[in-house]
Image (cartoon, rainbow, N blue to C red; front, side, top):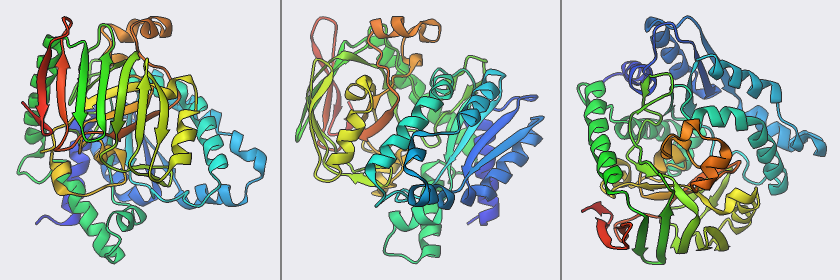
Length: 409
């Protein structure tokens, strides 16, 4: 097996050349937890070798973040560094690429006052909205990769010593990110081609809705008018082809915010802000959640739904085969970058404008008229499994099998 240093270099190469498609002369902004500094430095090296004139790294410190919730005055939780997000938006508007290294402690805020956490999240979401819109509209090329934070590793593998858990999580990231091949760049090109073919098929079918059926689930998700499917590599508005998520197994599109009906049950736990939401069950009427409960995390779920008007509808529906490498690993990663690629899923909140024909040129009002949802949040949770069937419903109302037992027909 390659040394850790060689593997780190390989991931950095894939992040720069596959994830970002970084261009000569293009600046890069990296955000990362402190613990991921070794990977951030390797990515910085490859970015400069690719011709970037400036790489800026912004580090998050989990310990400092926790101190805020433990010692800051009560008024602090409605504040956020607006200047920081204004600067990030300015960087992306001027053409800088964006790369995020995921891998913070999923349990960092466990035990903290939920009202404070909710207030801090809302304040940050409001300030971050201009940045999020530039990212979700693919104004620039961007990508997310992962690094094994020790606290994250201990959560995923609680029965192991920390060093062993970190090694095991690193191996899981390595395999899920399709780096365990002689030529990962070529492997990603082939994988992207398969996803592109699936996207083309679904765009040609022009389904009116998707029907999910299985234990605890009988859900019809109407699709937005003029919707487009996406998945794998995408071309940003600056013309650069990038892979927003490494790993990725999904094809996805925009639901119609007013045309979602029925019941659905989660098939995997959702790790969110230090809480684990298990066995989520919700019922939709006319596009909105009207009933919601969870075996654990019900209070957190209710706070999510109260975020704003759009939090009770869907911004994304995605199809992922049960045979995906992440599903077959049997690992719950406690991280959406991985867990959403283990099963078909839906997302409460904001829709991606790229999933509407001409969406990048449409006003918020025009997007809403086509059914695209708007919200401060975008939270994915898994509803697919080996027991879930999916039908596509045509404009004439005819049902066609898309997935049986979690696999493409």
